Image (cartoon, rainbow, N blue to C red; front, side, top):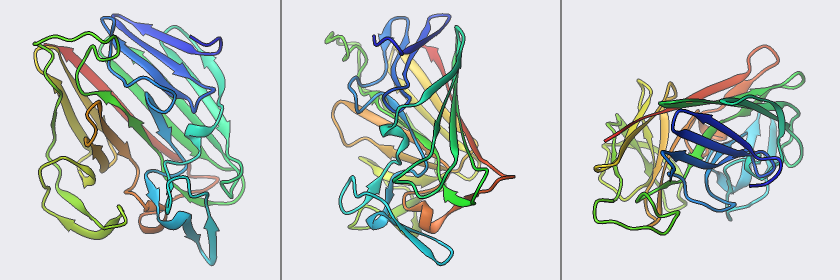
Length: 271
């Protein structure tokens, strides 16, 4: 563990946050079992100040058009927060708060805060984007990499460790075009595998079940979730404040009197 890592504990739950590497959850353990894919690019990172892909890295704000770095050509993906060192504002045994100031290549000034609260049966993540200057469109969300089968992190295996099952009931699926972005057409949800955005107007509610081991629910008041399960090792359930390319299609305006705030909660029970 690195010297500035923050580890929270509650009951049999343990979370390690790495503020110097995008303020990502580098580890999430229940009864000593790791649930997140390990590695500097994985864990669970905040997506901010945008989520998913932004078409050709461009977004408009009134008469202005801004260009973001194409870190997933031909698009810009997942924001700048995951590549930034954050500051630890405070930390206790089961709660921590982190901040970073928006800067280039993001064209606006502001501050992002992430709060991580751990309880024996839940983890609550909160993001806030604030400005004291110019208003701007933004998005926020999380990108967790849940292990498809538990005990992968330790290399252990067992016949009882069946792959995770994803259960949810979206109202629609965003039709994905050849450029991997939503076309704007909403369709009936299709069976996986997915790298797709879904609409849940009553709030995100997705349950992951590792048969015989664990059931974990990802919930948020937001109505957008991206589900990605095309890899063998891990699956992703990403609650967010808007769909991919949302800076252009579903912008949420951050103003000096109206910050962008969002929360996601993971709850679990052992089977």
